[in-house]
Length: 419
Ligand code: EPU
Image: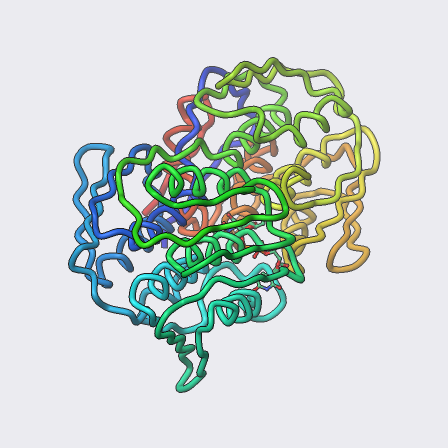
């Protein structure tokens, strides 16, 4: 198992480029199944979750050709409608293939998707299953597989009882080829959803309202393919910004869209982290004392759950107590136990809330990365800790951040990857 060995205490300096958004790419790859034409994708991040998604796409019969940084996806000969557990169990976003397969072939068979253990038990897919029924699809569950079948999908109306990013995107993709009009209510509003809708609209779909709680989709007979450039990863951008603030460093984050992390920047205004933003860059300036501030994670445009763990590390350096309220996932605060082992003063109130009492000195330790976002948070903790930290199970970090060691080392971090 690979590990990182990180020497703490380095001041970061220089520029870092944000890669393409993982959570946008994980939707555009399945969307390639909505058309028989070739899709050309630029700015695809080279990370483990995307490799898993490409493997699944190939298993479904698609041809994937990589030319430098450009991927050409040809799904003309894709004809398989079953997601094999050997692929689907490896990542939660395998569920994103179900809608496009159902829309194109009228059928899809799939196991419960795998992925990070950040919610109680298996992360639910009830909204997907319920939502598919509005199109007239029949669902059977047998031998650990869900099986959806429909002769002709018809548009309908669905109200999401929980706001879900992937369920919104999945039903939106299904509706694009369903007959008639579909109205989705209480939708998630994340930039990745807007980006997916923009791509689909450019290639024949009729989707209105993406980025608002109500999305209306008028079904069309076919979708053309074309080219798509993956939007910058807002979570990477926010993570680097928090990292610089925690390490009291000045760095420039390039190729990002600061508008996508306004919730974080508004918090920076409150906690004395100085920054300068442009259309596609963000400069974080070495700041003085960091002030404490309570946050509550929320769907976009609120404070993203995917930035909660880095922010929790930052609050260990603040002058006072902050309440971190994680509203989306049940297990995303469990990693704070690792910060406590490093010397942080954190009190868990219940599975959704912790109080972080800062400032505390952190000390390097031997640790294991529990999931993608907790993993990057531990890297931040290790960078500001005294001494060496050894992090095991870094596959979890490689799932979401491309060559993070090499990129941070260019900022003068001291990270060694041991295979
Ligand atoms: N939920 C249900 N039923 C469902 C689906 C979701 O109850 O059928 C609940 C979940 O249990 C959770 C809430 O709804 O409490 C939100 O989950 P959501 O479905 O929005 O999460 P997701 O769509 O599976 C996406 C990102 C996550 C990100 C969340 C929230 C992708 C591939 N994943 O997940 O990203 O945290 O939205 O913004 O887009 C990550 O990148 O590390 C990550 C986990």
